[in-house]
Amino acid sequence: MARVTFPAGGDVAQTINPWRFFFMPFGSQFGLINIDLGRSSDPDTEREVLDDVASYGRQLGRMGDALAVLLDHFHPERPLTETERDAVDDLRSMLAEIARVKRRRARRR
Image (cartoon, rainbow, N blue to C red; front, side, top):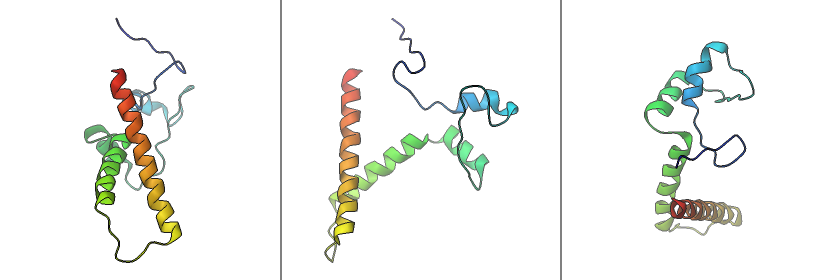
């Protein structure tokens, strides 16, 4: 059976490119849905990366996965300051929470 989800009624995906394709001729603002990609020194390259390589979420996910590997092998030569330890602990906690959400969503499929 097909799954139908209405606005604010369920899962939300980051689907920007189709909207940009259809509404770009109308300017940066159209109707009730407005998406601002932010300032970029080279917006055309950024659009091409998003279209052809990976979404922001996928890019951040891959960076997080790589950081988790580096953290597992991280043995500093000098003791970390409390601020540095907090930053590393916060990153580990965030990566663990993201992994938990991904596992939970994978079980739902």
